[in-house]
Structure formats: C-alpha cells, structure tokens
Amino acid sequence: MRCIAPGPKFRILEMLKAGKRVSGELIARELGISRIAVWKHVKMLKSLGYEIDARRNGYRLVKIPDEPFPWELGVNYLYCLKVRSTMDSAWRNFGTYDGVIAKEQTKGRGRSDPWISLPGGLYLSACFPRISSVSMVETLANDIAESLSERYSLNVQAVEGKLFLNGKKLGGVLIEVRGNYKAVVGVGINVRNPVPRNFARLENASLREVAEIVIKVLQRYNRRERT
Image 1 (cartoon, one colour):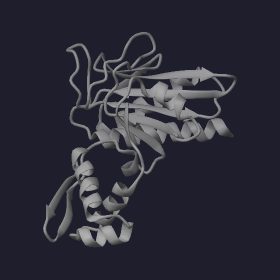
Image 2: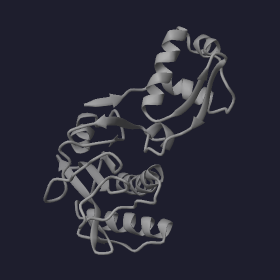
Image 3: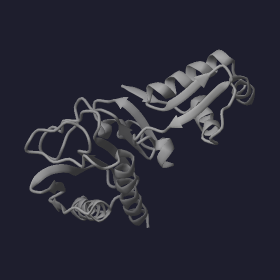
C-alpha cells in the first residue's frame, strides 16, 4: 500500500496555485526546507500528474490533473496509489480520516463478487461513525444515480445498490457494519478505466467531478445519520 501523506508538497502546491512563477529559494525559505527538498517535492507532484514548468528562475503550475485527489476536493480523505481494498483501508484509518480514495485496488470487492479496479475509475470508501440501517444502501445508490444522471444528462439507474447505464453495470455501493453503529460505505464507478464489453463507464466525464458528486451525496447522508 502506497499512500500520500500530508506534507510540504501540498504547501508548495498552494503557493504555485497563485498562478505566478515561484522561485525555489522563496519556497525553501517559506517552508523552512532546503532547495533540494523543494525539488524532490515538486518531482513527487509531477509523478502524480501535475504539470509543473521548472526553470532556473523557479516553478510554475501549468495544469492540475483530472484525478480525485482529496486535497483538491477539500475533504479529509487518505489518498493511496494502490491498496488491497479501500474498505479495509478505511476501517484501519477510521477516526483519523473521513474516508479513503485509491487510484487502484488489487482486491476490490462488490456486494457479491470482486470489483476489478484498474486506474481511471473511482474507488472510495467513506467512514460513517453512526448508521441507522444497512438498508440505506438502496436510497444512497438511488441518490448517486440521480446526481450523475442530472449532471451528465444520462439515465443512470440503481438496482439493489448496483448502478447501471444502458443496461450495463456502471458501479455499485457497498456497506459494511461493525458493532452497533459504525460503518464504512464503499463506492466504485467506472469512469475512464478499461472495462469488459458488458460493463459501462462514464468515459467523457471528469474523474474529479464524479468524485465530488459522490462525496457530496455521502456527506449529506453522513450528516443525516449523525442527527
């Protein structure tokens, strides 16, 4: 499991988002680190897909990648490049993070079968400190389907927690409960990841935007369950 922890790289990113070229010397002074450390953090950001123009007179942010990075979505989620399962990772980090988003899962699971989770899809799990009933999976899936349909002018349908587009499986919602109240809700949606011919995907959608739509629905349910 390789996850991205908070650190100087995100402070560097915020400085670059101002739109101007920023010198390595200024970044190093502001963050209290060496210029070599600045270069290493910029290199990490580039590896995540950020397009950064690096020259002798400093760094300039050119483009932000279309990825569901929690720091771009403004949520307290852990982001991992590869995990066995976001569900398992969410349970391990329950109380520290509100959820987990992964670029890839090696052992992703659906309600009744494994979920192939190659890069390009949305794979996330949200922590619910309190849940009233697992039956909410159906209404939750319905709300996600309606939100996606409205945004992308599609007819996404939810059946027993599974999402379908034009009769083909697009994704699904899974709930796991431990104890009397705690739960982790997992959502998987095919976006631009390769899928078998009998599956659907939102290939023209923004992966980050799909994540934002899903997280807003999850946050609404999480607030409702706490009251």
